[in-house]
Amino acid sequence: MNISIENTAPLGRKLVVELGADEIRQEMDSSYNELRRTVQLKGFRQGRAPRKLLERFFGDQVRSDVIQKLVREYTERALAENNLRPVVAPEVVTEEADLDKSLRFTVSFDVRPELVVSNYEGIELADPEIKVSDEEVEAALGRLRERHGTLQKVADRRVVRDGDFVLARLEGRANGEPLANFRVEDRLFAVSSEALAHGLERLFVNAEIGVEARQTMDYPADYRERELAGKSVEWRLTVKEVFRRELPELDDEFARDLGSYANLDELRRATHEHLIEDARQEGQIRLKQGLLDLLAERNPVELPLSLVAAERRAIDAELLAVLEAQGISRERALESLGERAEELQARAERQARNTLILDALVAQEKVEVSDDELADRIVASVREGANARQQRADFYSRPENREALRAAMRREKAFEAIFARVRRPAQTQAASGAEP
Image (cartoon, rainbow, N blue to C red; front, side):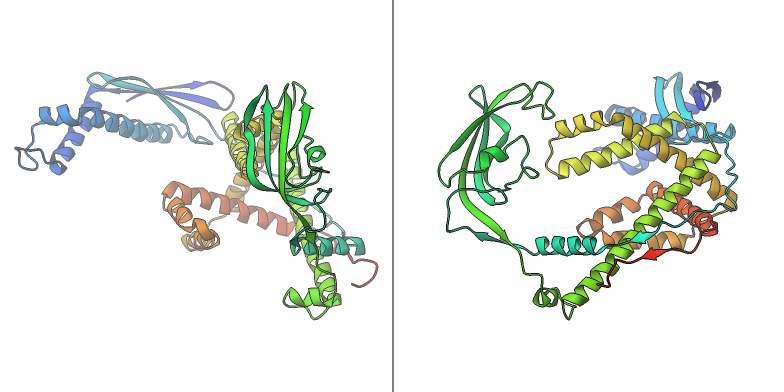
């Protein structure tokens, strides 16, 4: 094996690995011997098929398997022999694969920067003051009423009003042709400017049951929804039924219907306590992020480009899944990510910096995660998966995913150890003006 190493950037490295014919031949012979033991060809006893016949039937697959195996094994060996630690999985490119002569491939990656985290002993951070006002309690109760509201069919009028819910057919047409993503049958719409995009509330309000309403709207060339951008769209709406949301009265009966409250006052007290706890948890999250930001400020480190890119891919994938789950087209979701590129890049860099700092703390604090701790976390994750339990179980059956989880748990433990040593004044908690 011949190896050359090139520094492509301050943290970038490129290995060129070349294997000779003898090394390749040894692996090819081993692969065909194993294949001969396991495969049975017509006319030959198992283990007796000639090499040339195996090459004719299985040559392409054996060649592919041998290349993959050699690349994997010799990449690991080259990294270990040169004491190189890629910060994320290397990019491997096969440049020459004439297995009768040689196999040459390149391994490109960033090394982990040397980092010793200092200046974290004796940090003092103040817990945020927690306040929950009477108005916030009442707002929370209002949201609770909304969640328990019911839709009642409107029987005393045929015209749609703002705040209604309607079962309707909606179609958008441009140049006389229907728009593929803007044609729905028997869909329930909430009639409000917040719920209806593209100015459609103007079409819905005052529409009459059973009478097709039409309205043409012009959209600018830079409109956020590409299918509508620069078009004059004729919207056609046919309302079939109208509903109003009926909210329960906020009284003792409503409190008792929720299950475990004797009266409305008890529900108010419980709501106040829940809001206090939510505010406390949110405050702790902000405090922990503040500690990470302070550690990053005190311990500057050069960011490996590959690590930032990996963080960005993860962020983009997560946001894309959220947007598509909200019913946004993939094309529009991708546009949204592009519009937020600067913000998302900054977030990726922040997460990459946090990862490097936490990994350094893992080493400095000598943090370990036992097999039992890892197993307990996996079991908890699978149980929480509800409908995705089998998928999670399959995911964690792979060693690389278990080790990724172990690494994440080490970071958690290291950070919690540091956070526990941060000096903080006693937490101040302010309740609302009057006891709920």
